[in-house]
Length: 423
Ligand code: GLC
Ligand code: MG
Image (cartoon, rainbow, N blue to C red; front, top):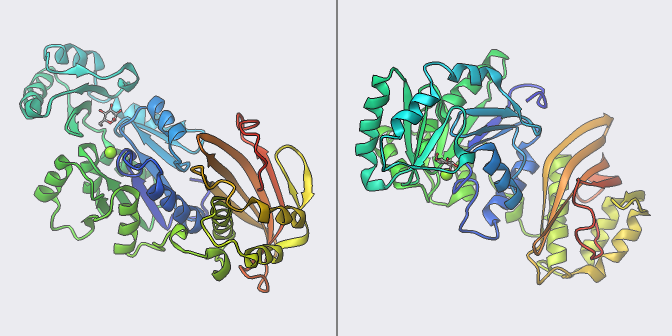
């Protein structure tokens, strides 16, 4: 959070499974669209929060499987664990708060009396979360009976049913909504309350998010019955909450537009972006450039000399490119290798995206831009930590001139692919 100089323009608080991530879309197109939008226009002045039911273990698994951006804040295990930054520093204050009227052993004792409750895997049992599977038809009856039993034992708990199958027992003060309210209070105390907050979800454990005062909310088109019912009963008159007509991350982008929260056209939806745009910021420039690179390598755009000429004017004539292997070559020379690479990745599911783009003006009109560049080629995934020095320049087509580009492998990415590659 220290990354920002003041309040965030927009804070997006999104669930992951079937909200940010569409498990029915193996190409992850909506997610990649969101990623490009976020990095180009929001990353530098906004906050991205993931709020998931997953424990840290299976949250990490998802991050290894899907092109998820690095969030500023991660809320896991249905609002019982909050961590900050890339290194995921836990919020100990939140942990202490949740200890109130909570006793895990008693929850275990009482739930053991219900044979209908089937325990979830060990990874999903957390200090402030006990989780089961329970058949939909039996859910409401069992929840009532269980609630009574726990109350009798002096516990104040919250029982949440999600996805028509999962039952979570948490301390009363926990849950995705309470965790968000806590976070907003914390930001407010530091004078950093975001200008706008948009919450996004698809299932039962997301319902609470929509009840947090003053937030905008979107239920994605594919939302589960239990959330849609909750909405009909509790929130239908709230003009700040909408039911998208688009699935998952596309529904989030749609809501950004509906509520006029900022730019809502993903760079991925702009054809020929490389030729016609004056880029607004170094991050916008970087997103547009790598999108062009992806399209060129996939053969998704016209094989036109105009692109090459355009690149030549963007890359400074004395600029250098240091490949992660350590080889240092003039940028103009690299561009000369491009024509023969056109469409090279046509038969592969080749995608490129950038994460974590940050930039600083190191001297007047001169920018140091840092980001993680990810590349998926077939089933091979690799990442380079990248630094670019660029100058704002009115006479270049996109408004920036690239002076120097330096990449290093993210641990483990080295040597995963022998094919020659460009940038
Ligand atoms: C995630 C968690 C699971 C939980 C469910 C609903 O799938 O892994 O433990 O029950 O979300 O909150
Ligand atoms: Mg979900």
